[in-house]
Amino acid sequence: MEFIWEGIKESIRLILTGDPELYQILHLTLNVSLTATLLAAIVGLPIGAFLGGKKFWGQKIILGIFNALLGLPPVVVGLWLTMFLWRSGPLGNLNLLYTPKAMILAQFCIALPEVIVFTAVAFSQISENFFRQVKALGANRYQQLYLLLKEVRLGLLAAVIAGFGAAISEVGASIMVGGNIYQETRVLTTSILLEVGRGNFGLAIGLSIILMLISFIVVGTLTYWQRKGY
Amino acid sequence: MKRILGLLSLFFLLIFGVAGCQEKGAVTSKTTAPKNPEVILATTTSTVDTGLLDQLKPEFEQKTGYKLKIVAVGTGQALKMGEKGEADVLLTHAPKDEEALVAKGYVIDRQPVMHNDFILVGPKNDPAGVKSAKDLNEALKRIYEKKALFISRGDDSGTDKKEKSLWKTAGLNPKGQPWYKEAGVGMGACLQLASEKQGYSLTDRGTYLAYKGKIDLAIVREKDPGLINYYHVMLVNPQKYPKVNYEGAKKFAEFLLSPEVQKEIGEFKKNLYGQSLFIPDAQK
Image (cartoon, rainbow over all chains, first blue to last red; front, top):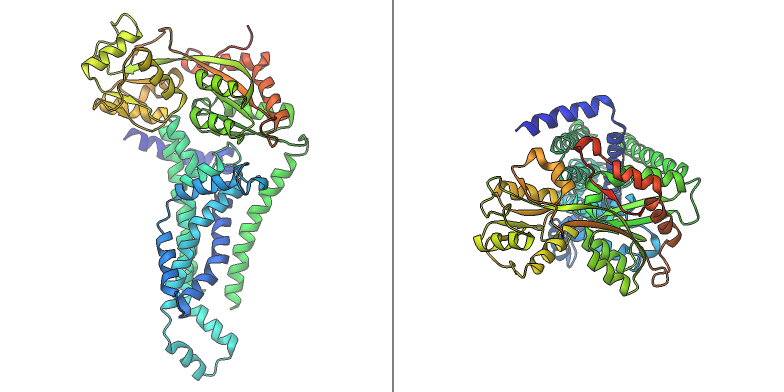
C-alpha cells in the first residue's frame, strides 16, 4: 500500500518540478502515439468507410479479418516487425530498428484495425434511406457528403479514440522495435516496465498515474469535440 | 464543414508541431557526429537496471560524437544479436557462451571490463540449511534433497546460464522437479516472486541491493568461488558482417576500458549501497 501513496506523491512531484526527463518521455510518447493514430486515421478511415458503406462480394470476409485483427497481440506485431527491420531482414537497409519511427510503425499496425472496424460500424449504421432522403431534399453532391460526414462523425471520432487508446497503452511491440533506449525510444509504458525492473515501484506508479492522465486528457478532448458536435 | 476543417487543421498542426520539434532536436545533436554515428550496444539488463549505462552513455557521446543505442535484452539475446550481426558491440556476462562466439569468429577483441558477484538468497530461516553447507555444491545438494522451493530466472539470461551451470557442476539436474520453478522474468521480478513464495534464488548482488528493502529474503550464500560474475566487452566481427559499425564499436570498447571510466565504474553508486556494485577489471 505504501508504494501507491509514494507513487501518488511521486507523480505530483514529477509534474510540479517540471522534471526534464519526464517531459522528454512525455513528448516522445505523444509524438509517437499521436503520429501513429493520425496515420492509422488517414489509412483506416477510407478503408473503414468503404467496408461499412458499400455492399460487395467478400465484404463480410474482409471485415471478419479486420475484426480478428482487433485482437492482434502487440508482441506478435513487435516480433514480426523486428524480423523485418533487422539488418539482415528485408527492410534492414532502412535503418529503422530502435528508432521512434519503428515504434510509430508498430503502433500504427495496432491502431489500424481499431480505426477500420469502428469506422465500418459507423458507416454500416447509415440507412439506405439516408441518401434518398437528402437527395429528395435537393442536396447537391457536396451537401450530401457534408450531411453524411455529419451523420457518422461520432462514430469516426470513436474510431480515432479507440486507435489512440490502443497505440498509447501498448508496450510489448514498442519495447521490441524501439529497444527502450534512454532519451530516444523510451516512452511512458516502457519506462514503467523498466522502473519496475529496477525496483523503483514508487516511480513506476507515479509514471502510470501520469500515463493515465495523458490518456484521459487526449481522449477527453476528443470526446469534448464529439459532444459539441463538430 | 468549416468546423471540421478547423478541427482537422488543429489536429495536424498539433502533431506536426510536435514532430517538427523532435526533428530539430535530432539534427543539432548530430552536428559533430562521425560518418556512421550510430553504435548499437546489446547488453544484459543488469547494466541498465543498475543505471550504470544511463550514466556512461552521455559521457561517451560527448567525448566521441557517436550516438550509443543501448538495447538491454539479457545476455542470451544480446549474444544472439552479435551472432546475427544485429549489434555492433556486446557487453555481457556469460564467459563460456562468449568464448564460443569468439571461437566461431562472430565476435573479436573480447576483453574483461568488470565483475561483481552472484549470491544465493532465500528465506531468513534457511529451511534447507544452505548457510552451513561446506561448499556451494553441498548447498545446492541440500536444496535438492530437501525439495526446497527454488525460483529460477528461466530466461536464458546471464544469471540463468550461471545458475544452470552451478547445478551442473554440483552434478544435479533439477529441471522438471515440482519444487524447481522456472519463472521466465527479469531479475527484479524473480526476486519478488521468490520473496512472495519464500523460495531460494540466484541473483546478482546489484539487483539484490536495489530490492533489499522491498523483499523478505536474506543472503544465504556468498563469496564462494564460482559465484564471481564477469562482464566482457566484445566487437562484432566486421569481416562477417560488413554492415557493422566497427569503428564506433571499437571507440566504445576503448571508452569502457579507459582508466577514467574504469574508475567511475568502481565508484558507481558506492555511496548509496556502502559497497561497489561493480569492480573494474581492465587495469591489471
